[in-house]
Amino acid sequence: MSWEAFLQLLKKMFRICNWQSAPYTVAKHWAAKSVMHYRDPARGSWFSDEVQPTSEFSVAVAALAKRSKLVAALLGVTGGPPSAIRFLRSVTRGPDEVRLRDWVLMEQDGAPVMSGQVEQMVQGTYIERGVSFVRLWCTCCKEVYEDQITSDLWSDPGQSSKSMLVLFERMRVTVVTRSVNPVSDQFVI
Image (cartoon, rainbow, N blue to C red; front, side, top):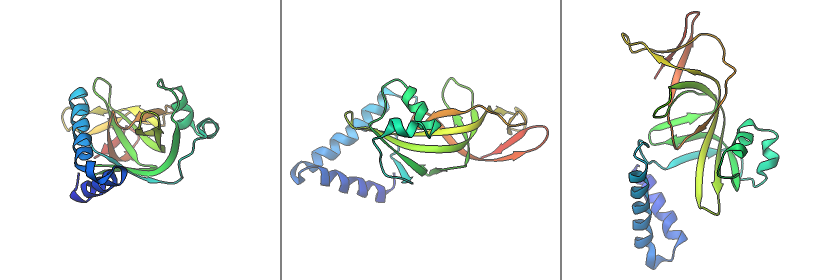
């Protein structure tokens, strides 16, 4: 996290508490992040996501599910529907930025590496739990293989009709460049 982002976070924390308890609030926040990291070591790093929204938060989640496959998929996930959502143009985690229409590689421990194109992104909240999350809807998803000799990343040629809900906080998402040829689809990081 950059110093500018850290200072912005401190300013937000100071605004939400009385000024006398601000140091305690900041220490409590960083202690909570530390505990989350120790509880889930599979997660590579704990960055605060920065988003560029294309809409305001909406609480009409069920109505949005009729127009969006991503929102419809969110309603089917265990844990209940989110309290509010908004659509995003891009999301930045640390030095990496993911934008709409980008091709990405999605990695999760114990699962094959998948490729796909980002069709939609949303930020959702569970107000009662105080939790915010980012979800991506990727289309044209295919399994990606690594050539053992050249270390090239490739997938089978042709279009795929498979779509995938990506839990941004639980997966490593890497933006790639895709090139198509008759033998395979190639991916360059």
